[in-house]
Image 1 (cartoon, one colour):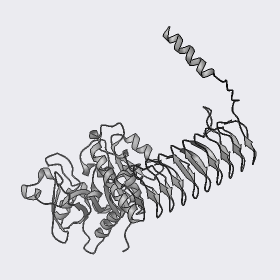
Image 2 (image 1 turned 180 degrees about the horizontal axis):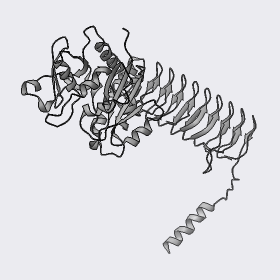
Image 3 (image 1 turned 180 degrees about the vertical axis):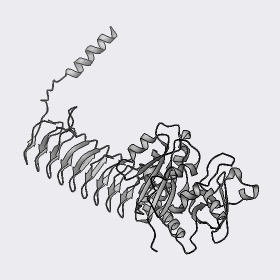
Image 4 (image 1 turned 120 degrees about the vertical axis):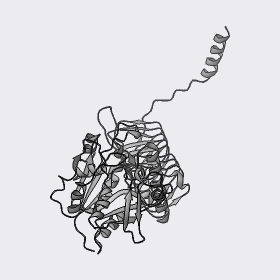
Length: 450
């Protein structure tokens, strides 16, 4: 089907007082990305001609978050209802001729497929005046109701506050999401009144106004999770949980083993290969790519990291942004890696910090090793060569280079380069005094007794 150009209006002018937050409601994250950005990413898949976000309270925060995203801003100075909010986008879209999707910044998970179905229904042969996205929640509560026939033709839409007992018994509810032609939208909105229980200008009223003109509208149904809105911290947590549950199911369907699925948390952009095993209590921040046959053991945290084929992470490991594990590398318990590359087969099995470093293929990093990469003002790099062996409890003071095949003795503080195949040892001389400990204890016991 050849479809007209598409534009989107996203309503984000609500104050979000129930969130009790200094952060704007639509900027609270789900799976590591602000709600509003989730929605805009889905919209972008449709290649819209225009995107307009209607703001009110917290305008500066939203404008800052959308800088460079090709979004136009419209302002709703007074909160007079959804119809009034949409009207604020009229100036931004005065040159646009096509279909408009009307969405909500706090309803972030509506799928691209559902948006596309709304467009296609709007452009079907019967040419409905508008297409409404309906859903059937487990508890209809105070949602507006849609009365429609089996073909989806809408007979009536009514807000819960204004609905009769018979209308409230209807289970098909109004999500508030609409698709409508630009040439119809603002003409219909100009006719919307506020003679209702809330004294507001309701966007859904355009459906019944079109009906008075002899033009029918249609409803299509989406899943309840797609139109779950966020108005409180509890609802934010519920939407996050719903998103995570679906993402876990998708990962397992794609060949990932989750030994305790409910304890694994993904980011919106986590990429996982096949035959990856993820143990309990693993958390992915944004920007993680994991290749095939990787094992991520319990209680590990990964963000902004690349883990190549056959590598092992954890347990209790932390990979920070810029961490790269090449094929069959291993990072073990209580190891932190930041902006560092571990070459093929390199190992750091215990209790280490590796930051701003290049670690060669097959190198072994002993327990307790740290790269001292920061002097309080600037960061410096450490280079560890292919096949090098760093003894336990070593401190490599950057900038420093350990050559291929070199060995650093345990307990060393290395401040100068160690050439290839050399031994570098930097520690104080051991002095042993026979009997000193026994004499010390006796003296202290006598002193205490006296």
